Structures are given as C-alpha cells and as structure tokens.
Length: 379
Image 1 (tube, rainbow, N blue to C red):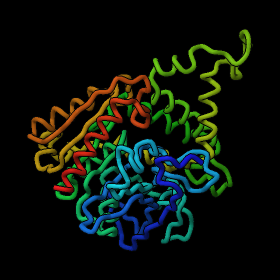
Image 2 (image 1 turned 90 degrees about the vertical axis):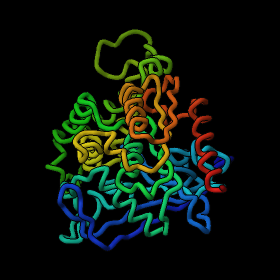
Image 3 (image 1 turned 45 degrees about the vertical axis):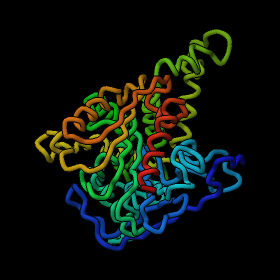
C-alpha cells in the first residue's frame, strides 16, 4: 500500500439518530443511522470542519484505506489528505453515506423498526433537502455550528448549494463542482431509462428482490453501463479506447469485440455486485427532484438572496451531462444576488468524471481556494 500523502488506515463510524425525521415527501423515518468517516482533527473552536457530499454512487469512504489489503483508496483520495487541496493537516473532514444509501446509512437494506423486516421497496424516496436536513443533525451531533466549507461534485454539488439556502448561517464556503441548479429534461430522461432497466428486470420483484434471494443484476448492469457512457467524454473515450478490438477481424456476433464494450461490461458487472438497486432508484429520483428555486417562484436569484456563503464553482469543457453553461447559470444568479463567487471552467477530456480526476488547472484552483478558506480561519 502506498500511503504517501494519504490519511492511511481509517475506520467508518455509524452514528445513530433516535428522533424521527420528517421527509419532504411527508413520510417519516422513525429513526436512522448515518455512516461517516472523519479525517484530521477538529480544532478547539470547531471552526475547521469540511463536509464532503457524495455523488450518485459515492459513499462515506472519501480517503484513505480500510485495510492493508485494499487495492484502491477512497473515492476522492487525490483531493483529501495531508498536503492535498483539502488538507487534513489543517481541516477536520467529514464524509458520509447519505440516507437511502447502501453503504451503512439507513436505506432500503436496513431493518424497518416498525416491522422488523428489511425496508426494501418500502424505504421512502428521499431528496437533497432531506439529506441536508440529516447532515445538519450530524453537524449538531459533532458539535459543529458552522462548516468552514461544504464541498461536492455532481449530486454532491447540489447538496452544497442546498446547504447554503436551507442553513445560510451554517456554511462559510460552498464548493459546487460539475453540478447544476436543476436537471435538464435530457438528464431526467437518462435517469428514467436507467430506472426502467432495473424495474423491468425479471428479478426485481417489485423492489423486494432480496426476499427472493436475488438482485436485479441485469438491470443494474445496463443502468451502470448507460450511466457510465454519460459520465465520459467522446474525446476521452476515443483517446482511451478508439476502435481497438480484442482480436483480429470482425466476429459477426454479439459478444465482446471492441475494447470499449469490454470496459463497459466490466464496469456494469462490478457495479451490480456492490450497489443496491433500490438505492439507485432513490438516488436518481433525488437528482430529478432537485430544484432549489421552486419554493421561491422558480426565481433562483430570490432563492440565493439570503445566502451568506462564498462560492467556488467549477465546470469542465467536455462535461455534457452537467455542461458548463449550467454552472455559468448558477454564477449569473449568484452575481445577480450580490454574492461572492469564483468560477473556473477547466479544459478536460474526462467529461463529467473530471471532478474526480487530477487535471492540473482544476487541482490548482481547488488548492488556492481552500488555502484562502484556511487563511480566513487564522484571521
């Protein structure tokens, strides 16, 4: 294991919340758990805390390793750690698995305390507002009155934005990366095709597949393959795979012939074994429902009018899932509302996944902004 500039071995913590949580749908969770990981040390003033919000298939394991045998570190290890842009020598960093997740937080795989059985399809649909509400309860548990920063890419960026609107006094900085203020019709369409792949799988059993000792593997596989295509850019895909074939000449059949086919099927198979179908359905619905301006007459500038946080917004040139114009729209409304915002549009061939990568201008901009967040703490 290469632990250079890594937080090293880390252990998740499951935090129980015994009070009911009223959800945006009107349903109530009688109790819930949040699985978290923390890195670095919370200072005496409890002012150096940074919350990392994950994207659709992410979780609490942001950085470091769970064991000596781990082949790969947490999903944002290149960004979080000692000496990295989000420096754990300076900040107390909190990662969590959101409600409805399948990595330890209360979700479809959890036991329903009212029935004693696994929730399965009975777990309610949760929204970004619900996640932020539960994250605020987590902050209370940790004794954190105000986050130095809330950071996220994609769906995580939506949570960072929602934090500034719902709890304006509790966020000093919001880093909204490769994100949007609401989904386009095309994005909603992609999500529905993915959900239909899962729901129409013969092993779905109306969402109670685990009672039948099975999972909708085929549907999850197809959903991930399609989703993965939208996370990549044509240029990046071409650079990596082109029209390379696994053997000489066409086989005139439907098995794997092109390297890109092999890659996508591998990603789909791997995902189907580690992710829960009911969780995937709920995460995509949270994306669809995100519309923070709805409560303000669809006026985003009005929604942002009482925000107190400063913003860092980043987009990527080849991201067609959450295209740069979506980030520029957020910047426009922040400026119109008189808020502090820094914006960078990064040239990258990585597509939407670029927020997870190490494009030098992006990493440099993140480091510079977070350095300024730290300097504020010292002032």
